[in-house]
Length: 291
Image (cartoon, rainbow, N blue to C red):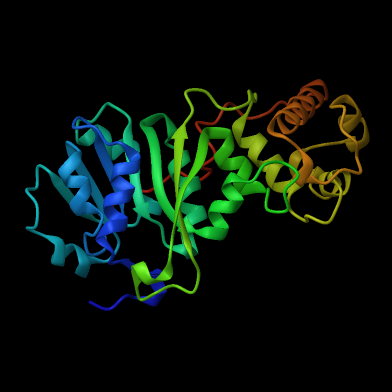
């Protein structure tokens, strides 16, 4: 079956890679797995041998038909659907799954960031994620403050997860071969976020604004977003947060970003603006039910 370019499909064909991914994750017999995009089942095969159950979500209906019947339904549940529209909490509740699930997948390069953001909105239902990404995306996720690659995606993931690089996968392991190398990463979901913030929705709006134009200072980016963030005095806010206004966002650690969010929300409250309640996570749009 040919890959569909519009879906960003690159099928894993090297069984050694699939086996290595599952072995690195140290799956237990009682684990429940959510697999994103099983494709031709190269990874599903090894997941089904180790886990209690695999919930496999695939957007391509033809691939699901091709996989049907390969494994007992009570072992591997195949679903046609868009992972970006999946209400994971509703799915797990419907299936009677209460323990945090383990996520696996070869994420399509063109929507990998969107998938991670969507899933982290359900982080209380996740134990970890072992996923294959474009190497550059993996580098961005794992980059520390001060790195040229450190940005919104780094903050988004590091706020909720502890990440580590497992290994690199060459283009030859896929059909059709992508033009870039891939990296398998392990993201362990933290019991508590890396930093305490009073309002996650506001925090990620702030982070997005600060990284909007990387070459500009945090003062300039904050001023550009002042109306949206309801910030009246950028200079005072940065002084109260003990942040040099000439710094750039890529130099700010999570603790500094959280400190600035606290200051801005206190200033808004003092001005009588108030703010929205605590959000369940950085996924801003309510996911629609999988079809």
